[in-house]
Image (cartoon, rainbow, N blue to C red; front, side, top):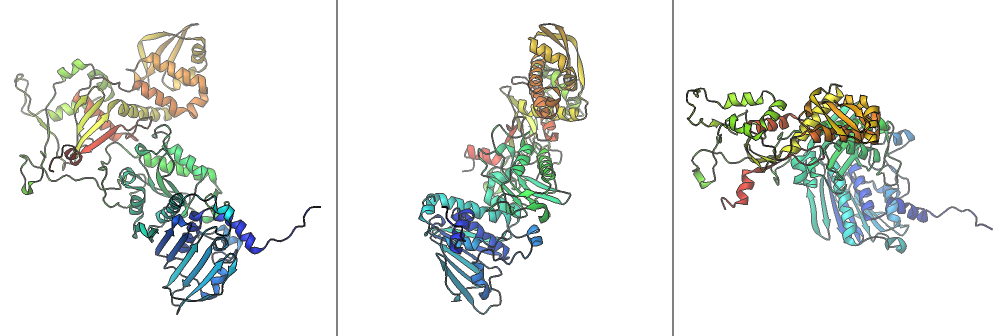
Length: 636
């Protein structure tokens, strides 16, 4: 005969609930911190011992708890935050179930001390192993202190599943950082075994992000600020170049609550798809604000998952907001000095590049090198000799790049030729053309080209120091963005070949050329079937007219065979265009003239996402004069 059904004792119910709500000390700390924030605290202090296993103490200066409510605060489903179902559907507080303190008290020795503002004295209540002591007077400033000792002391089977104190502390610190990140207006301190780990004063959001996520993140972070249809997304998206091997630096908050949501992760990942390298993960701190009734936060015991009423609309909004911020990043738009530790500025306007750290400002420069104070000085007006184009033409790159950047060469020649220089003085060396100084508004962010290194890198000089550009990666991004623009406008221009290029093809390639002729035409390619084993390229995209048409045609046929025509042009559109751009980009060991290199630099500055190539690799790096001086120990 089966056992009879019976009601479980309240203490056992609380211990069962604790298994869901308080899976480790970090979960208890999270509950206590959320209570402090909900109480309106402006200062919160956390003390931990042995990773929170032996002690968790949270002290705040919030609204406090009345003496008559202290015992009730430790009862299950007793809360001051909701009164009805309507309150639950519009909940705006971090906590609302009223089971956090009861669950924690069931598996620890808990002491709750509180004094509301204006109260004559504080009151304290102790709970141990289900037994609740009556409240008694205590000495305490206005606010509340919750002390949790010996987590899981009365459930040895569960306690043995806890990890080492160091591991548990790492989880506690992560919980502290998430709450601190979402509430920069709150002064927060974390101590572990008596040693201060974090002391965070009240800050702006940008300053708090810089403190918690580090200078590397702050130096290249992009400001995100978008609003639409009752949704607001703000915060910072990390530079794709600094992609992580894990998701540890991903912080997403919904109405101030840290969440892990597959829909959100997918939307952000899609926004980074075009600029992130292979299996790297983006870093970000983003804050979504919406009507509480449009999101259900009561779908997970620890409230780290949510359910959106209009999931698809939220996904599209997040994707477009982050994608817009990433698209606004252009090479040289800012030149943050790596390792700088200046305070962060407030977020910039929607979609604009917002360098969070002030960039390095070298000392005033003047010719001659001597200066008061003995500091290092650099020539404030670097000069670049005019390169005769007849010399550069021998490299073979002039015609190629002139076709891509028509008019730039003539403009630079006109700018660099002195008015008094005439053809009647052919043997005289041309006078040096002055480049704008760092204080001149005409000085481009990526500076002016100095030389080409091993046919792979462009070396340029800007106001702050040296710029190194991977010319293939940079040109690949430029061509890719132009192809996307033309494809979206259904205006990829075809360039008929003077002589069609024939090549051997297998039966599958021949069939693909015949079956997907329209898709190929949409991509700017025209192929003709010459026979069972031969194809000919009759036209190629005008942007890629200098690329080898045969490898380009083979790559497109391979993509179309794998994905089909219509699917390839929709779901795999970016992959197709990226492959085309890779084939059309300038190759290594291609000799470029200085005007051609400068034309590439100017185009980088005007192209979206030009800080990374199509595969997520960086296209340029900068070394400031301060960093170069450090390499050579100048001034030391």
